Amino acid sequence: EAGVTQFPSHSVIEKGQTVTLRCDPISGHDNLYWYRRVMGKEIKFLLHFVKESKQDESGMPNNRFLAERTGGTYSTLKVQPAELEDSGVYFCASSLLAGVIVNEQFFGPGTRLTVL
Amino acid sequence: AQSVTQLGSHVSVSEGALVLLRCNYSSSVPPYLFWYVQYPNQGLQLLLKYTTGATLVKGINGFEAEFKKSETSFHLTKPSAHMSDAAEYFCAVIGWSASKIIFGSGTRLSIRP
Image 1: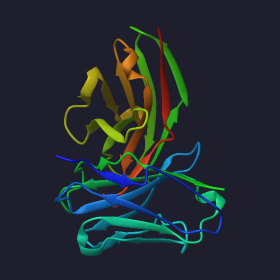
Image 2: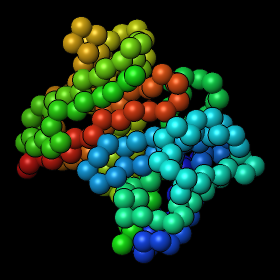
Image 3: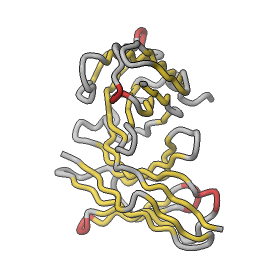
């Protein structure tokens, strides 16, 4: 069974440009999460989808970030326009059942975003 | 609110030596605690988790952790380090909303030959 996949693995863009990150969760997983690790800091929660609905987007840093999960399958995270402080590693995770507290979240390898 | 503190951003041990990675948590409700590991160029992998019941939990690759409520700790140990254990380790707790994971800042483990 394929794990969580993320594309691209690495993206280098100029400040002010737009970047779109994609996450494909494990097939059948209702829950999809985005996290971010800025250099040297802890991994921080961005948002949580249950199927196609945003369950919790309390971690989204500002309105330059837009996440979508059309059809409840893959998700995209768009940063527009990108700023220097957006550099970091963006992780996606998925888990199987909605409403289960300690259901294991399976993580993808991350997308390393560098904004110059 | 929940929070996690990992003591030591970098730990180095000799091969065959005891591995001890420290984690303290803060939680206003009974916590669910986790250790994740990230090997180079890979995603985060769950090592072990504590939910309820036995306070000593065993995980993959010979790692274990003990939940100590009185000390608000969940330290990770392995009796004998192997070169393949070199990675970054994250202690984490499930937040009040029971969805988002709250991570510590990570501890990079190096193994000396």
